[in-house]
Amino acid sequence: MPLNHAKYIESLPHFTPSNMVVVGKFGRSVGLKGGIRATILTDFPEILASDNVFYIEYVDKLSTILSINKLDSNNTSKTQNKTSLIATKHNPTQENTRAYLPLILKTFHSTKKIMEFKEVIRREEAELLCNMLFYSTLDDTRELCTLEKDEFFYFDIIGMCVVEDGINLGIVKDIQEIANTHYLVLDKHFLIPYIDRYVLSVDLENRQIITKDARFLRMA
Image (cartoon, rainbow, N blue to C red; front, side, top):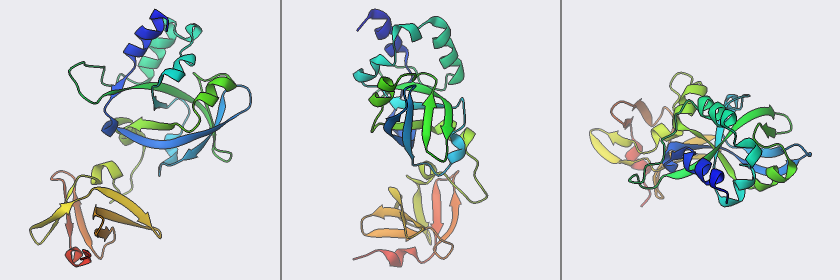
């Protein structure tokens, strides 16, 4: 790999996986100019606006996208400005960080679910992205996605303690959607429907979810 490629990869934003939010998954390429079909996994499609930045975990096969003619100083500067330097730069002492390649969204055709990125201009490049997940950062998600009253992001709920009558019932490990109802998953035998019948309040500041009668839902 040429030296300037290596330097550019070293300068890529580095994040811990826990700082990333899945937005969708790339499918097959479309057309000759880098279009790619995508499965959208986010609950906030408004994030898919032109000029927003998304990230894919860097692997060596993506070096083609970092072609020499794209690694001029002007392009690098534009990408850094666009990401607002949110990314944590690589620190050798920081564990579990990974390099991510930023891609600036050019257009998103919502009906056909086809995406085009400014950095992906050929079919061969789009094919490299097939089956890869693309992400937003936690900070970008909070900035770009609008919550209604009493709505919360999954990543804010996961990890919170569930408390009932002063007793800690456990920690939310996951959120599942079953038959149009969201469930707080404390373990495989303990799922709490996220409905008013059981969930009284969510306290983001103290990282607690207050429930009523939820303890009776635990399966033996």
